[in-house]
Length: 154
Image (cartoon, rainbow, N blue to C red; front, side, top):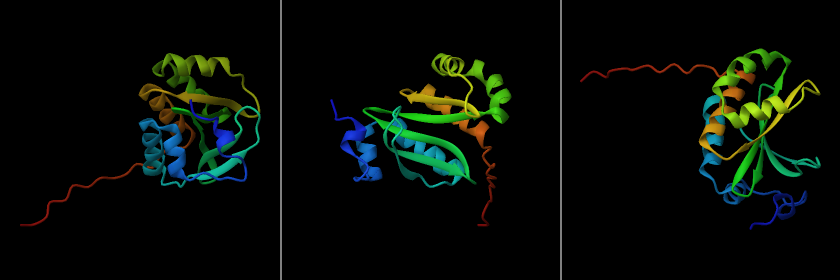
């Protein structure tokens, strides 16, 4: 068993992205970060949280000042914090039947407070990762990328 994240990297010891990836040791981590970079063209920002619920270094993703999610390293998986605010509530409720049972149950058990439902989602499977991607797309609509097929003259 690995040491607890916030004990390995206290406030005065900022981890590299390579060390974060090695600690999590899960391909879903790479897939999530690739999705955020490719879909939103954003750069992750390391931040230290003293929050008692999830202390330690985390990775924040923002687009145009709006939070997409915050990722928290765990031993063998990671947690994604996605806030579903008032503006996203109706669309999220429509999407709920298509999400995993885990995500539905979490959504229904988290009360609305401080402007939204603060979902701390354990990313332990591809299905849950896909749920998180869909919730993030509701928070901030990705710009559609136009793919042109051009035939070059011979």
